[in-house]
Image (tube, rainbow, N blue to C red; front, side, top):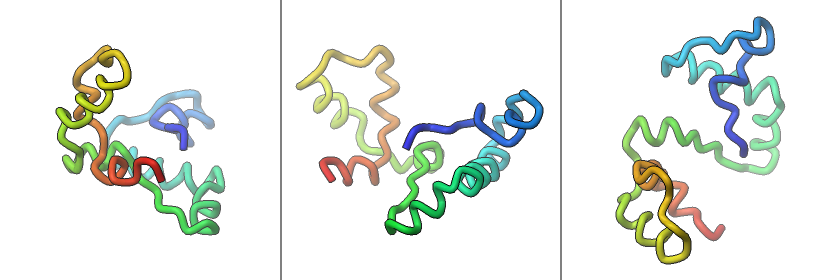
Length: 98
C-alpha cells in the first residue's frame, strides 16, 4: 500500500496544513486514513494485516542492515543513503516473495 504519511491527513484535507509530526498524532491519523479511505474494510474483507513501517522502525523490529545490503547489492547498485538498509521491518522481510 502506498505511504499516506503525514501529508495526507484530515488536517491537510480541511486546512491545507500538514499537522504535527509527533507519533501519537501520526498514529491517530493513520487510523483515520484507513477508515476515511475505506482501506480498513478491504483489509478486513481479505483478512490482510496492516503493517505500519514507521511503527516497526520506531520499535526497532528491523532486519540486520548488512543482510539487506548484501542482498540488494548482489542485484542492484548501492542505495543512495546506506541508512535505508536499516529500515526494513523484520516482518516485511519474512513475507518476501509472498
